[in-house]
Structures are given as C-alpha cells and as structure tokens.
Amino acid sequence: MAFNLVLVNPQIPNNTGAIGRLCVNAGASLHIIKPIAFDIDEKAVRRAGLDYWEKLDLHVWESIDDFLKNNEITDNAYFATTKTDRPYFEAEFKDGDFIFFGSETAGIPEDVLNAYEKQNITIPMTKNGRSLNLAISTGIILYDAIRQTYSTFEEN
Image (cartoon, rainbow, N blue to C red):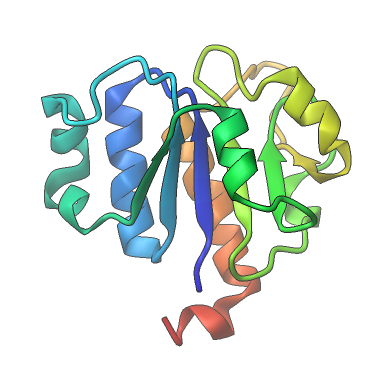
C-alpha cells in the first residue's frame, strides 16, 4: 500500500504534471476530483510529468461527492489548508492515508474542511507568506508522511 494524494479541482496543468511525477517517484496514487480547469491529456501536464504520466496510478472522480461515496474517509485522511494552525508534522501518517489538497485558487471546500476539522493540517509560513505552490506543498507533506512510515516505504 502507499499514500493517496487527492487534488480537489486543480487549476494549473504544470502543477498537476509535477505532482504526477512526484507520485510515481514516491509510490503514491493520484486522485483528481473534477472540475479540472484543463484537459489532463494537455501538453503542459505531459511536459511537467515527463515520461512518468504513463506510469502514474491515476484516478479521476466526477465530484467530491463521487469520491467520498467510493472511498471511506475516517481517520485515514488529512486535509492541507491555510485555515488551521495545526502543522503537518504533528499528523501521524499511516500507510494508505489520503492527503487532500485544494485548488490553487480556492483550496479545499469549506464544508469538507469543517467535516474533518481535526484532520486539517498546514505548512507553517511566515506572516509575509500567504500560500505555497501546490506542487511544492504536496512534496513537503508527502515526503514527511514517507519519513514517518519509511519502513513500509522500503517494502514497496
């Protein structure tokens, strides 16, 4: 088993391509929840993902409701947001967890954040920062999750 990165309504093809490449290298699955602001077969996605896109364990969902109906979300998920004070490094990741990231412009829908409030996490930033690039954020949190579960990562 491996981690599951979930992108809710991604907006920028280059970010999604880079995240796909990250997932292949980290042994993670990528879940993309529509609407998507671009065609995932677009050249920019393929360019950013290089030749990794074909190796990606990709799942595309019609909506957040479709995703939640088909994936049981309990304590097996974390939701990255700037709307919490809980740093990601306080999360206790487990192999197979879902790690959600919102769109570059709107983040994760507030009703979802509220439903899983105790599982909201953030990347600490100075008061001068507002947010980080989505691809960078996924890398920071995914590799901390791998660090925490490294003995199982080596088995994959």
